[in-house]
Image 1 (cartoon, helix red, strand yellow):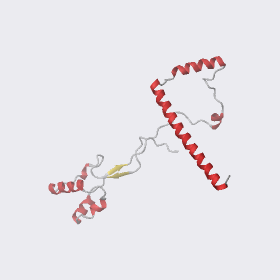
Image 2: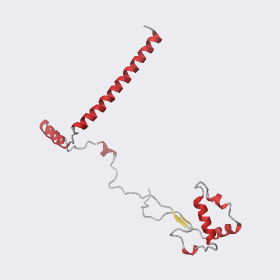
Image 3: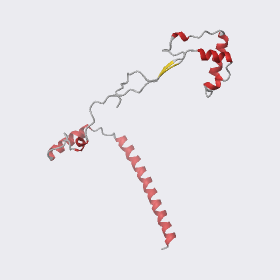
Image 4: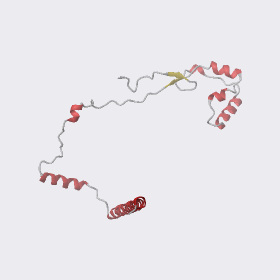
Length: 165
C-alpha cells in the first residue's frame, strides 16, 4: 500500500517552453515580428487535426536548429487526490452479526404509534397530481393488457396451425 498523499510532489517532470514554472532563461527573441504574426495567424486558421510533427516538416534547417537549442520546459503530471477513510473497514464477522434496530417496536401499540408518526412525515400528492399519476398507470396497464392479449392470441393461433385441433 502506498503512503503517498495528494500533496506529494509528482514523480515525473518534463520541461516545456512557455509554462509558468519554466526557467526564465529560455526566452526566445523574435527577429521578425511580422513573420511571427503571420505564423500565429496560420496556426489559428489551420485545421485542428494537424499534428506537431506535420508542422515541423515545413521547418527550415535554421528553424530546426533553433527549436533544438531551446531549453526544455518542465511539465508536472498531477496525481488524483486520495481521500482518507474515516474508519477502518469492518471485519467479516462484524458484518455477519445481527445489529440492534433502534426503530424495532417492542409491542403492537408501539408499532402503530411509530407508523402514525412516519405517515405524518409523508408529503402527499395533490388531487391533480393523483389524477395525473392514476391516468399514466391506467394507460400503461391498458397497453400491457393489449400486448399480452395479442401475444396470447397469436401464439394460440400458431399452435392450432402447427398441431391442429
